[in-house]
Amino acid sequence: MLDAVVVGAGPNGLTAAVELARRGFSVALFEAKDTVGGGARTEELTLPGFRHDPCSAAHPLAVSSPAFRALPLERHGLEWLHPELPMAHPFPDGTAAVLSRSVAETAASFGPRDAGAYRRLVTPFLPHWDTLVRDFMSLPLTALPRDPVTLARFGLVGLPPSTWLTRRFRDERARTLFAGLVAHVMAPLSGFATSAIGLVFALAAHTRGWPVARGGSQALSDALAGYLRELGGTVHTDYEVKRLDDLPPARAYVFDTSPTALARIAGFGDHYARYRYGPGVFKIDYALDGPVPWTAPEARTAGTVQIGADSAEIGAALRAASREGRAPDAPFLITVQPSVVDPTRAPAGRHVFWVYGHVPHGWTGDLTDAIERQLERFAPGFRDRVLARATAGPPELAARNANYVGGDIATGAVSGLQTLLRPKLSLSPYTTPHPAVFICSQATPPGPGVHGMPGHNAAKAVWRRLRQT
Image (cartoon, rainbow, N blue to C red):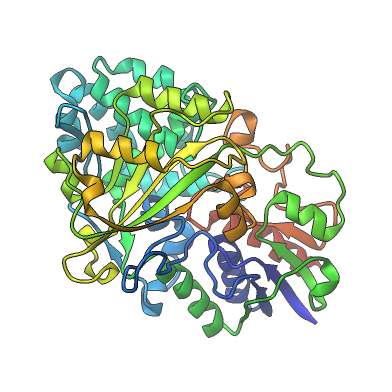
């Protein structure tokens, strides 16, 4: 009998499997698709030689992750590449605010009226980042905080809505960039703990950067799988699990799945019936015959580029998708251009480009024209660079990855108490009604993103049980 079986080979399932194997437990991992990766895959979606990331592409949380930093992933082929600028946010007038590794450069891009306010916001946390991110990502308390004072200070700043935090800025440039940071998790700007979301992304840029993985996000997943095999774990792909009886006997079962799928597979009935899924996204991957023709020079060297004219436009796009049930006329866009720093992603002189906008949950329309209108506002002539495009709305995203219910790439709404307390109100969110069954997906704390911490935290709960039995 195996010690543990893990279902789902996304970053969290892979991390949970690795953590258990590192502690000497026998582990087998089962994945429904033909490759590991989940939300961290790389495929040729458009033309031969153009390597695209179907979901995650830039990795500010992965490079800062306490779970990943403790593993020898570089030995298994992972290499982080850092663009000249982590992120840029262009404006219609051809200028841009930036999120740089340098706090001073970032603050200067906001203008003199807000430079000091931004420095005062982030500087107190920067020396404590490694400890803070460990404490923040271990909530609820799977370990006692190493720096409870800094964590409490962060909570005082981060738990209020981002609309409160941005009142300290006098001009629109800083407000707009920060609104865009919050929108990475598709949360309304006025939501609970949205200040923390924006602040985490900003601090990550200043401390560890917003890199891409050489060759694509698949490199991270392949490194985790390679290390798991080195530890003696086994990986089975093309293996869909429909019920617990489909799996070999084990002392523990760990699911990197949505709560809905877990309830169906394990026969938990309506145990997760109150769990809420959030808005979806409409994703386009482009093959381009040259770099994106951004008007703002800063955007041409940034790995990630946020698109939204001002904080009001960003807020309206989020409300349309999450509350009004319609696609926004001017969608807020998150774009990534990996080939500005990674020439392996496209043939010589060509580029790959990654973009998505927010749409309602389960939306079945086509946002391509609205997305490209937005891009043309900030990069005139963009359409002329397009060699091929691959589009995916909520139905296609859910078909590619069953965890993305209704196109929700966060595997659950990041709003209200569910921002922190997911998938249920519980001091032990990784356990389930069955004592041998656990959940480790991004539907559990600390939530969405490629950082492996739900898998890391869930593995702690699993090995505590295994030691007791």
